[in-house]
Image (cartoon, rainbow, N blue to C red; front, side, top):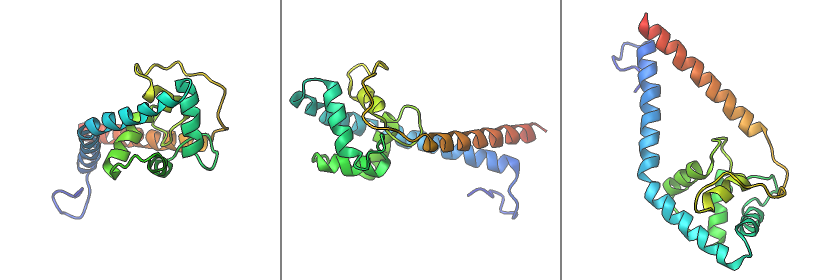
Length: 162
């Protein structure tokens, strides 16, 4: 509940506390799912044994998961793709997995991010030829939302100090 004192108005402090509480709760939920994410990543990693390299395996996964050829994997495609290779996970695990793999937090998984997640050291050295073209609008939308949230936080902090 945002209107804590139930006076019919939301103060800047109430808004600030609600936003910060939501962020904290999401972080805790994702951390609680971490063990399951590592387990799922280890299961996915086992498939690399059938390929000549991790790069070849990632390209194969991208072809299977990104059925529309956009150059990235969406949240829904991640779930369907995992089902297609006989890996069944809960929605909570899928959310945690998406969060773990999506390094730039733009809401989609690229071949580079998938490679990094599956490599043992999670290094940032993936640079093969592109699998397919990508779409930057999702990333730009996410950045816009983050900028708005940052402005709200700054305004709330300012009013809280007044």
